[in-house]
Image 1 (cartoon, rainbow, N blue to C red):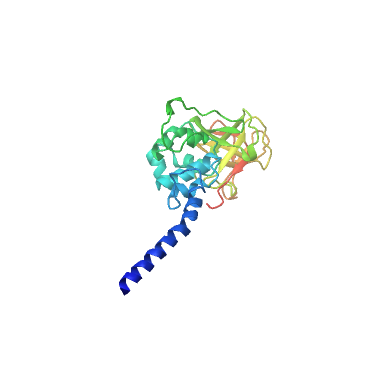
Image 2 (image 1 turned 90 degrees about the vertical axis):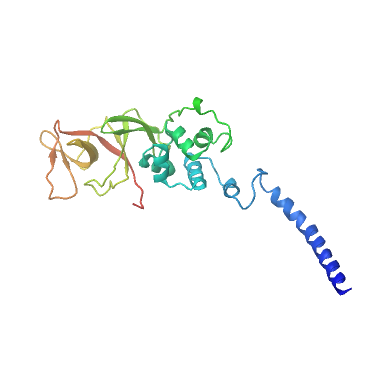
Length: 248
């Protein structure tokens, strides 16, 4: 008889708990638009984040895939500096977003423009990156690449502007490894200007110094001699923007 009373009491408590939890369950289910998402999944956590930028969407996809920048670079065949620029919002896009999306197993339309579902049917074949007015093409020693970076504050870019990624510390303290330098190839340099120049088949940042005939390229270390501009020391342009990762 005692056991029967305990069992009946437990049943009553269980029914009361179900009645009390039903409104809470409904509130959780109506708290987001994705019925397939639950509050213990990564997608639920990210469903409340703003995804109005390529950098945000890329970081979300990398987090869900458990990929580092290096791992994504290897899987997609895209250079790690390009991945770094995209995750930092310092590149508006890339023609290689198709490869990046494939490596992350997400739709390229969602990754590039925030359109459609993150995963599902995709029309990658029809995707193309349309340059924005603030896009500046990235150049290397070999010439112009298909990559672009975005000007600070969305400043409208000119056709004479180029962007260079500094892959190692230059002789000027302002331009450390990982910096992005945007130059104008059409304005004349003045003494003290930071410039991009090609010296002995290497591109780096120097400080310009006016001379009696040709100008000179200098660095911060006074023990290193100035290099006179010539066919083997070519000035490419004057730095107008310098973008740095302060954690480097």
